[in-house]
Amino acid sequence: MTQKVSRSTSEAEVAEVGRTLAANLRTARGSRGWRLEDLAAHSGVSRGMIHQIENQRTNPSVATLARLCAALDVPISELIELPGQLGTILRRSDAAVTRHGMHGLSEAALLISDGRHELWDHWLHPGDEIHDTGHPAGTRELIHVTDGILTVDVGSATFTVEATDALDFRADRPHTYRNVKRAPTRYTINVIYTGARDRRYPLRTSGSGRSNP
Image (cartoon, rainbow, N blue to C red; front, side):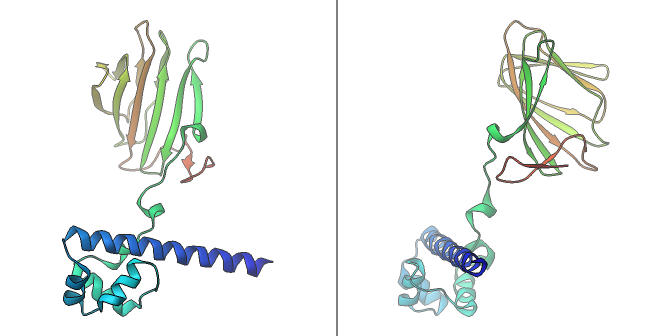
């Protein structure tokens, strides 16, 4: 049973690489305005072989792939990059959510956390505030307000950030986010660590709702 599952998984992975290679090769050729004949002439690989690769009818040898990449002036890794290597969706419904405020109506959802960056989605109820003692040295925060007005206190400075505006500030010192208006405020925060990350917050495993300490 174990061998069957392993073989099936391997075949699926090979098929995915073939689909990716076919699509990326067509794209790279098309971006240069080349026909099959043009790529064949530049690479020394036959038109028929290129046609078979682009239609997932064969898997090229490393030598063939190298000739195609040299002709197209792209690294081999670019032609075989799988979709999962280019990007991953992390669902808000899977995010780690903490509630704040007098009645627990405000919330902060940690969408992305890879050890170097964090992306947060905040919803701040009228009259509520969130206080942070500060991140490790060198940390910065980029805030973008999408709804309402956000007041941010950092040391002796106070910033008022309106909807569609952004704020870049030093987050390695105590700071407070406040909503002094009568309407809810929604904003995103991109935390950028230049040194140690803040271990108060979990790392999110790509593509899942699980988190690691």
